[in-house]
Image 1 (cartoon, rainbow, N blue to C red):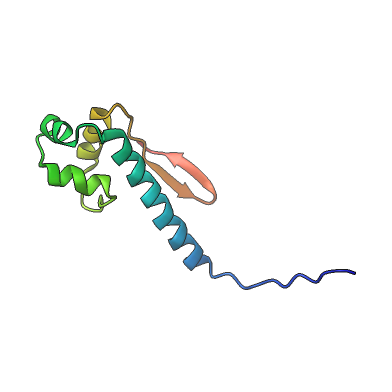
Image 2: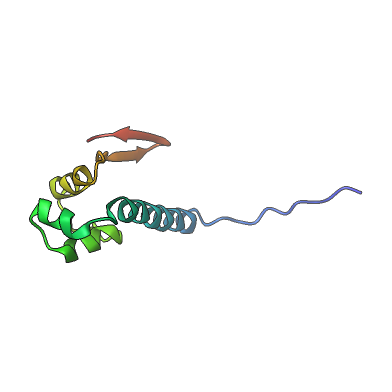
Length: 94
């Protein structure tokens, strides 16, 4: 007996938005995981409030400056990379 597969229409915008939210959560979790031992210490190194560090760790980076994000990531031992997704390619710009 042969099964018939039915194609369901996919709303690409919905899928892309869901993917973005998922990646934001995973990225924020990873940053939080890396800086968990000393968020107050990270805040001190960056001369920012612990509240600011907490916002970054929860993915609230819409209004953060790139230099501040870079310093945060370097303070916890990482490297900030900024990529642009264009036409199926990822291009690192910083």
